[in-house]
Image (cartoon, rainbow, N blue to C red; front, side, top):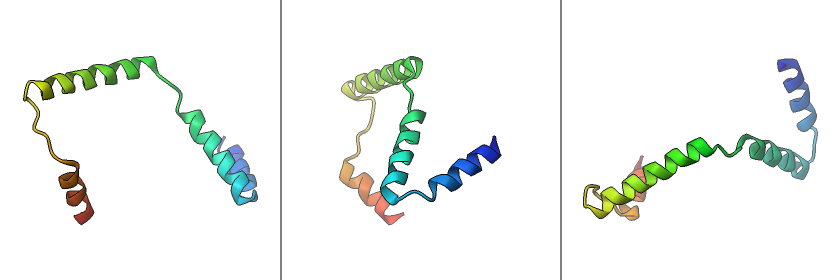
Length: 73
């Protein structure tokens, strides 16, 4: 398998920039297959966080503070 992957990679590296970008995009899309079980878990988590926020159980932080913190890092 590694030999096949290396062969394909070497062939891809000979493509033009736009062709290479097209191949890369298609490869990335192929990795992002929907998973209804994971989607359901994330929906449950999001609903839980929203409910906690509405009840005052979650401290909020402004986006400005978050961005400032990570710009310094």
